[in-house]
Each structure stands twice: as C-alpha cells, then as structure tokens.
Image 1 (cartoon, rainbow, N blue to C red):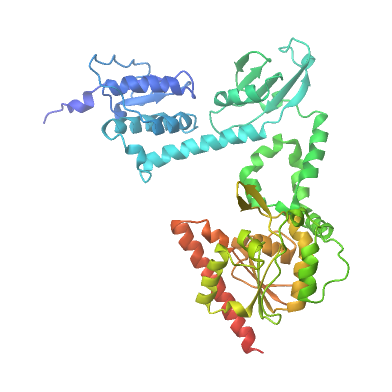
Image 2 (image 1 turned 180 degrees about the horizontal axis):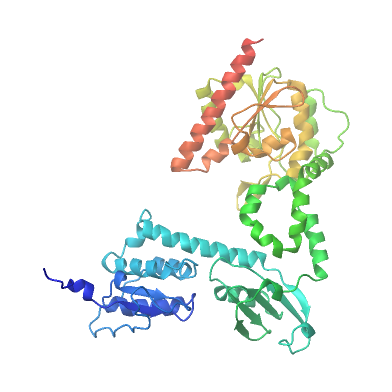
Length: 486
C-alpha cells in the first residue's frame, strides 16, 4: 500500500498577516495578489494582529509574485462597497469569507446578485451590522469638558472634550472623518476599548485602547442638556420598543439623559393625558345637531389647519346609524367636494364595505380632523399628517358628532382616528381585530386607513388588503349581532 499523499495535499498553504483588524486596503491588495496567483480559499489564511500562526503553522509565508500574464481581478462595485463595511466586523472569519466570495466572482461575476446565497447573505449582514454600529457611534458619543491640567498629555491652553464609546466592531478609525468634520473647532478625544482618536483642531492622531475609567464622569453642562431633553420628550409619540431598538440599554450608561428615561416613560401616560386636556379648547356649549356641528367646525380656527383656506368637511350619513366610520382627515378631493371619502381611499373603502356586506348609505362617515392639512407641491396639494395636538383639539367636534349619532359601533381607520377617540396613541398592529369599550358604552374597532393600502405593492399590498378585509368582516358580523339583539 502506497503512503504517498495526493498532490493536492502537498500544495503549499499561505497566510497573510494584516497590519490592523480594520485594514481593508491591505486585505484588498493581498487578496488581489492571491487571486492572480491562483491560490484557492482553502489554501489561504488571514491573520489579524496578535495571531502568531494559522492552522498549518505557516504565518509569515509570503505570497508568491503573480505571473506576468495573470488576468485582471474581477471585483464588482456592489462587492467592494459591501466588503469595505463587512471587513470592519468583529467576526474573525470575515476576511476568509470575503476572499472566498471574491474567488467565486472570478468565475461568476453575478454571484453578488444571488440574495438567497448564504455566503452573500452573511457578508451583507456583517456590512449591515457595521453600518448600524457606526450609526450608534454618531448618535451616542457624548463629549464631556475636561481641564487640560487634568491630563499631562494635553499641554496647550484651553478646554478639551473627552468621550467614551464601546463599539461592537472595528469602526473607530473608519468614523474619524465624521467627528473631525462635525467638531472641527473643538479639541477632543474619543476613547474606546478598540483604540482612541485625538483631534487638536488641526491634526488627527490615534492612540491605544482605553478603559472606561480613563474618561471623565460628567461636567456642568450636562444639567442643561438633561433639562432640554426632558422638555422635548413627547409622551404622545412614545414607543418603548422602537426606542430601545434605536437606543439599546448598553449605551445608556454613557448618556447623561439616560437617567431620566425610566421616569419619563413611567410618567408618559399621565403627561399625555395632560396634553390631551390642554388640547381640548373651550368652544362654549356642545353643539346639539349635525347642522350646528357643520357650521361650528367651518368657523373653527383653534388650530393652524383651519387657517389653510380649506373648507371643513362635515360628516355624512343617517343620524341614527348603527355604525360610524372615522378617518384621519379629508383629502384633496374631499376638500373640493365637501364630502368625506370620495377620493381614492374612499373607493377602496367602498369596495371593502360592499365585500363585507355593509351598505355605505347606512353608515355615518366622518373624520377625526375636519379640515384638510396639506403642503403645496407646484399645483398639487400633498396630504400632511395632523399632529397629536391638532387631533386633540378637533376631538371637540368628533365627540359632538358621536353624541348626536350615538352609534353602538365605531370603526377607526388609522392611528390618527383612533387617537381622536381614545385620546392616546394607538398601535394598529396590537389593537386591531378586537373591540375596545368607549366611555359612552359604544364599541370601538380599529384598523388601517385605506390610503395605507394604496401605498403598498406586491405581497405587502395583498397581505394588508386581506387583513383590512378581515377587520371589516369582523365589524360586519358584530354589527349583525348587535342588530339581532335589538
């Protein structure tokens, strides 16, 4: 029996030692050389600083010189854009994976277009994570003023600013330009466990990794910042899940405003109730008829929308309707016609009402806000979403309509309509498909606004259209139950 090893196993293995874990240019140059030498991915290892050898103990083995007739390396622009970001990821396998993908591009230049390919998807996920980490660095670096006498390395007079940040990936040097441009007139240092940056107003220099204790703990200006943050915190727009996604708890310890967040969240509902009460203007005695409501809302100038030169669009339908449907506000065509739901969104609503077996002429239709809020774009008027305060002010007229019609069932189309009834911000995804009891004993059902369906395409449009149809079918069934009960 022969003990000779296959020729492929006797082929040399190479290792490239990179000068820095974020040195994409060094990786690119070496990768180009290796491709031109025909070295397959399984014969090449990439070593970051601090790594002394690869699996085969060949660290430091230089790559051979490419032959004179070596073909040009194919690297598409999409690959280079993604690879530059992915190379900054903290996964130690990133350089091997990037080289393997570059190797495949030589035979298949369209390899990056296969989004279902697990290798392409992994590299894209690395790039996305790096970009997200860079965004966090831009958003959550907080400089604190220190005296130059506190640090012997700072020898010139004046104030210096120091920030501490803990990146997940090797993004510090890549983001230096952002801070130089934004804080060009300051002298600052950004300290991180992955390296430091120092700017003296003219020159950027790099430093070694730092520890949290190297950064100052606070400065007097943070009290002013905390006061400002508390004053702009809007409880009506609070979405804790979204906030934690954009500002994860790991960054809180470096943010002076973070100590306010728990108490601001805890008091959000109470503060929102105060905002709603403040938005409810005193209009005198509540209107007692649809005619009084229409005339009063037409004269209303309690919020800026009433001064845009549009007409108030009153509700429409039988005053003994069992179902009231409430939209956000009139649109362009509704303002022109003076009637609710006559534009494209109204056509979508009509189609779904008919499919659910609900006669439009048996429904009272109105809007949470009575005037059309828009921004001009040439000859067009583009819909602009009313603010929470504007919805709260117009709630006076909506409550008056409900007291006149007294419907046992109310359907709110969209979050703005739901706020006009609940006095708080509502999540369509969480609160659709079930009844909510209102103070007057009527039932509120919540679904999306039909204009939302018009903005979607493909599978997303089909999925939301089906959900909207299901919501109206449930309302229709509930309406039949109430009617049969007398």
